[in-house]
Length: 275
Image 1: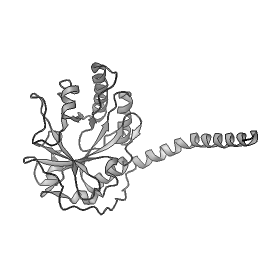
Image 2: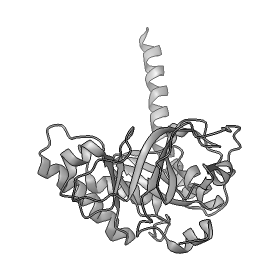
Image 3: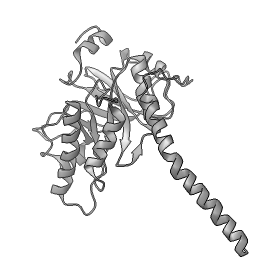
Image 4: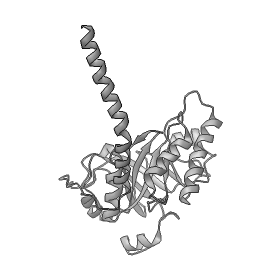
């Protein structure tokens, strides 16, 4: 490659990088504007219909709901809204908003707007990474789930999803980071966040330091979730293999043993005719 060609390639690359640097704020602001706008969203029309969920349900529960992320692809929320599971309607959904310090769930904006549009009780969750700044993760999450005035837009409390044990980080430091996120989000939203974790992970890595927070526990292939004897659970994710109309990929199903205190009673009456 001669010197002139090398210079030309270098010039083209330089122009591209400059253009990208200049345009990034525009695309960032455009994305923020789309997120913050109050207009309706075009709800995806999917053709995934099932004769059943494909999983056995627990025998006793009050509320039934799902949680989703980009792993479920584009969702037909109108079909989800009208779906029944063993003659029971879905009462709620939790939508992943952010992942670590930098990443947005790519379908969050759509899912967040569409669930509000069709009238499903919803909350948002953040996937926590212990090796990244807890405050930055809290700020990232809040920037996605709050309106321009800083008001949280969910019906249900924010959730911190903690599944990964830190590498090379002492237990106390791990817990300090989690508390920074929880405190920052509670201060901003006025709602005590829910802690989500697997049954074993929670017992080994989080209990009893976070016992005072509402617990959403994941535990599959069991009749009851296993938690410490002095710990109560509010939500139980009992499978990740359910089939729900409008969702073409397997999805998590969750129940409540009673109606948790953080559920808005007015909306539950509207959904089910009872508190």
